[in-house]
Image 1 (cartoon, rainbow, N blue to C red):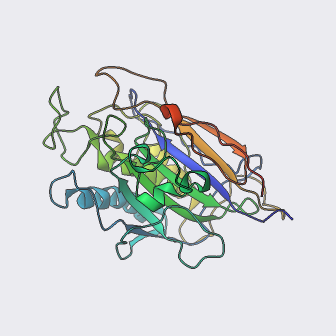
Image 2 (image 1 turned 180 degrees about the vertical axis):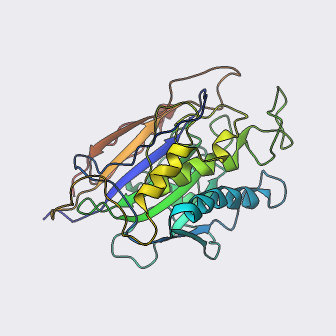
Length: 317
């Protein structure tokens, strides 16, 4: 008998060029169904990896995270009663959702080593797709800056769990995260200038957390691209703010964007993305991120040859 499982969606932020502010939004649709993903409640309880980032000065990465969350709180204060609450920090947090478990947490973590550099080729975690949690490593595309894993019910669209990972791995596969306001780094990379801004990245990823999708409008917080030195996504554009307000109106239930979800089976799907890498030659630009999806009961990572963003494979029970 086929198991009843939630949907799993992955959202990505990749590297490319950006432009002027946007005035539009797109909510994340349940694939193949006429309604959106949305939190059924009014609080996002998040927990930060206690390890933080070893590559930013002091606890500046924590301040940048809180600044990104404060931007969304400020939007909520204008139109909603949705809250963002920080829980106790976690040691060795687990990304992803386990059905019927009481230990699921909304996690925010820096992955400072690539799984390709640390996981033995014979390790069973490769087939089980558990290496990221087992080794606290980055197990996604080498070109992806940040990734939000959102698990939601295919039947209702209700979000069950949302985790954020930032690709701070080395060896040219990850990104140098910084926390200063300016100037953009010009040649020499250091923590005293802006390379890949944490607050900029987290403000975007938190948009995915609340159910917003990418828009191909230059300047939007939810534009799926971010060049080195960018900080303008720190300020949530009017379109993205309106999307949040429309989804979570103050004093009212969350708003669906289509017909009422009907009853039906649960499935699981994996959507992954390809993008551009900070490890490319200076000045190089690659195609922006693209979301791909397919029905699956699991997925297998490709390690040989360094493939990133491969379409998921369906596995039998």
